[in-house]
View 1 (cartoon, one colour):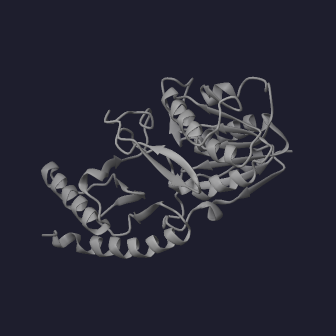
View 2 (cartoon, rainbow, N blue to C red):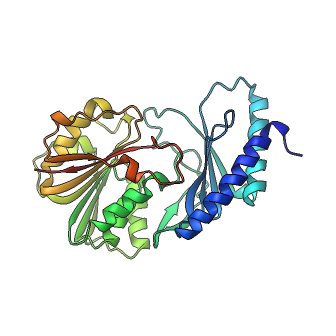
View 3 (cartoon, rainbow, N blue to C red):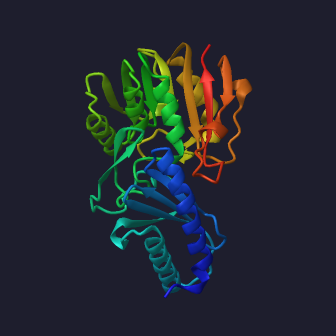
Amino acid sequence: MMNPKLEPFANRLAKMHKHLGKWARRQHISCYRVYDNDIPGTPLAIDIYENIVHVAEYARDHGMEPGEHAAWLDDCIGVIGAVLGVSSDLIFLKFRQRQKGLSQYDRFARTGAEFIVRENGLHFIINPSDYLDVGLFLDHRITRQMVRQESSGKKVLNLFAYTGSFSVYAAAGGAAETLTVDMSNTYLQWANRNLALNGFEQEHHRLLQADVMTWLEQPPQERFDLIVVDPPTFSNSKRMEGTLDIQRDHVLLINRVLRFCSPGGVVYFSTNNRRFKIWEEEIRAAEIRDISRQTVPEDFRNKKIHQCFRIVNR
């Protein structure tokens, strides 16, 4: 029997699943956010990745004892499974709090639960069990498509690349070559597998393990026509020299990036820092345009999930 306190959650989830399911089918989308912290007291983000469901509970002061909270989560999983028609072994639960230090790179488990999902005709490996995030950020679905449409014949640089989804899209858009840079070898190998999965050879699609901020200090050895920059809000990883605070450091970061950008080239810069304010007057660019509203998909009711800017180099 359903916990009566979860009936509003069940009703809302059923309503959004029906509405967004129709929308997703019309758009040929198989991975989308179906519930986005919609009901007070049920602070969950629920993402459907084809046959897989990923659930993240946001940090809060819920006032429950550990055993009571665990039972509440079990009840939530039961509701999710019943409403979405998914067995419990295909529902993966995470606890999300403000990112600290190495949390983006921490491994939660070693189950190796990997699946292949599709997006806009491309294929991506996800792992919903072993890491905080599954390997494909759904809020950048539109941004990835923008990069794809702008990549033909261009040299593309992907910084803080994570699992390389922007690189895959750039390659699919006909990029002459891509360079994918991330500090994590685990994620670079994941990016390499994503590229190979879509038939893109490493000869034209290079990977580089490096601390991006340090790598950008060097004089540019080559320039790129299109650059994607999607850094963490904060990082003090032991693999970095110093710390990264994106509000404090974004001017330095973007100006360094522009040194690697061809004249008239484009930089897509994004952050999930909801309080972020861009200091345009300090950035040496020809044009800076806020494209956040155009890049947040319909399935994300929280329109502040990220901020995104299209920056044109001088």
